[in-house]
Image (cartoon, rainbow, N blue to C red):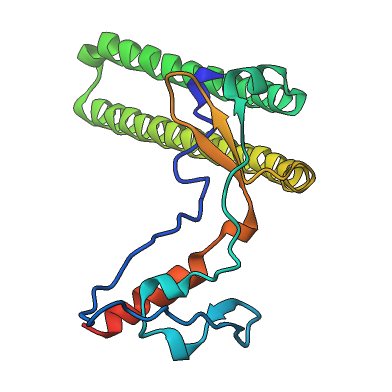
Amino acid sequence: MKNLSLILNGVLAVAIGVLYYLHFSCAGSCSTPKTAVVTDSLGQTVISEEVLGDSAIAYIPDSLPPAGNVAFLNFDELTSKYQFYKDGVKSLESDFRVKQNELVARQKKLEEDFMRYQQLAPSMNEETRAGKEQQLAADEKKLYEFRDQLEGSFAGKEAEFNKSFLKKLDGYFTKLGKEKNYDYVFIYSKGGPSYIVYANDKLNITNFTLQGLNSLYKKK
């Protein structure tokens, strides 16, 4: 469904490895950096403090597997044939139309009230005219508040549906990725952006990268 933007920016977070190198002056050939993978108190895999000062490449464990197997999904075909997505979009559209019709009806009533006021204003005394203008202003404010509430409510429901949709994909591809040895699975749309919906956890080097970046920052 093109007009709902159900794949929102910022929803998919992908761990991107940053390989960086420190330049050290050394005579002849530099020694091979040590790699000592340990586990911290939280159970996270990290690099031993003994090797933090040697080289940034030492932060990446030798046991890290190479990335290779990549698969992709056609977004248009997926969203047009996946029944969960179709039912969800249909429900969102139906709910939006109901609220939109209510908004249009309120706007039409306000316009009619304003036109009636313009017709009767010349025959009203100053106090009555001022009271009617205040009422119209209050009704207009309520209309804007209802419009904003409608937009906020729909955005929230859209976000919840998008979250459920991505959760379905994540659960499915976590299992499929292990069975088929996929390292990455993309959602692809011709002429549009691509999104990673599955990444092999074995390729996640976030902890190692953070150690390296923080170590470099402390040496400033």
